[in-house]
Image (tube, rainbow over all chains, first blue to last red; front, side, top):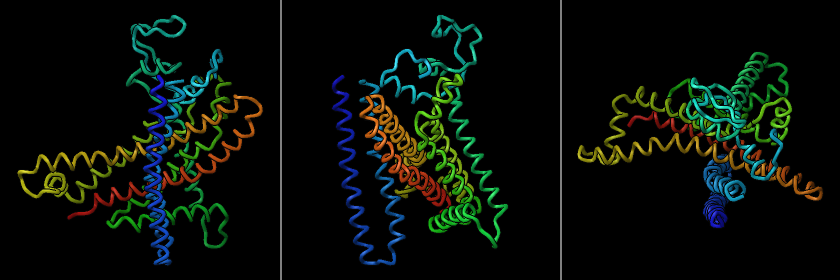
Amino acid sequence: MELVYIAAAIMTGLGGLGAAIGVGMLGGKLLESSARQPELGPKLQVSFFLAAGLVDAIPIIGVGISMYLIFVVAG
Amino acid sequence: MASGSEQTVSGYIVHHLTNLTYGKLPAGFERGHGDIVGPQGEWTLAHGADEAAAMGFNAIHVDSMFWSLSLGLIFCWLFRKVAKQASAETPSGLVNFIEMVVEFVDGTVRDTFHGRNPVIAPLALTIFVWVFLMNFMDLVPVDVIPSALALLGVPYQKVVPSTDPNITMGLAIGVFVLMVYYSIKVKGFGFVRELTLVPFNHPAFIPLNFTIEFVGFLAKPFSLGLRLFGNMYAGEMVFILIAVVFGAGVMWMLPAALLQIGWAIFHILVITLQAFIFMVLTIVYLSMAHEDH
C-alpha cells in the first residue's frame, strides 16, 4: 500500500514539472511578443490564457487523482 | 454524514463524492438491513456506492440532473428577461453585464469561426454560460447544501454537475453529434475523403489513413469532456480536503478558512477559464467541420 504514496508523488511532481516548463515558456514568449508589438497585447493575452488553461489541466487532474489515491485508496 | 455512525476522513470524502442515484436494483440483491430485493427488481434510491454499482445501467444521477437542468433554466430565464427589458435609454447594471457577456461570446465566435452558420453563436453562448454556472456551484461551500438536505432525509448530494463525468461527457457527445452532422452537411462526400485520403493521398493507404484520422476524430470529444471533468473534480477534491482540516481542532480553523478562501479565489479563474476553453474548442471543432478543402 505504501507504493500508492510514491505513485501519487510521481504523478503530482512530474505533472507539475512539465506544466511549469510549458507555462514558463508560454509566458516568456508572451512577454517577448507583446514587447515587440504592444498593440497585439490584449489579443495575445486571450490566446495565452487559452493555451495556459489547456496546459494547466493535466497537473490539476494529476493532483486530484493523487489526492484521491492518498486519502481514499490508501487512507 | 447522514449515517453518522462512523466519521472517518475517507468516509467523509467518499460521501461527498457519491451521487444521489435512483435506479433499479436487480432481483436477489441483499440490501443493508437483510432485506432481499424481490424477483421483479426494485426502483429505489441507492444507499451507498455498492448499491449504485449494483444498479448498473438502470440508474440515473438525480442530483446532477436536477442541478444542471435548473441551472440551464436559470440561464434561459435570466437572459430572456434581460433581452426583453433591454432598451437604448436606461441600461441598468444587469443589462450591461449580460450585454457584455453576449458581446464577448459574439466577438470570440467572429474571430475563430469562419463559416456561415447562425447556430454557432447561440450555441457558444449557451455552452459558455451553462458550463460556467455548473462550475460556479463549486464555489458554494462544500457542506452547506448536502448537510441541509441531509436534515431533510436526502442521503447523498453532489451539487457540482460538472464533477460528474456523465454530464461533461454528455455535453461533449452533443458537440460531437453536431460535428458529424455539419461535416456531412457541408462537405458531403468530402468528409469521407478527409477521413480516408489524408495525410497520404493514395488508395493503398486508406486503412492507415482511416485509423489515424478516426482516432484523432474520436479523441476530440473525449478530451473535451474529460478536461472539464478532471479540472472540476480536482478542484472539488481540494475543497473537500480543506474542509477535512476543520475537523483537526479549533487551532486549525483559521488556517483552514484562509486556505478555503484562497483556493476559492484561485478557483474563480479556473471555472471561468474552463468554461471559456470548452466554448472555444467547441467553436474550433465546428469551424473545422465547416472547412472544405
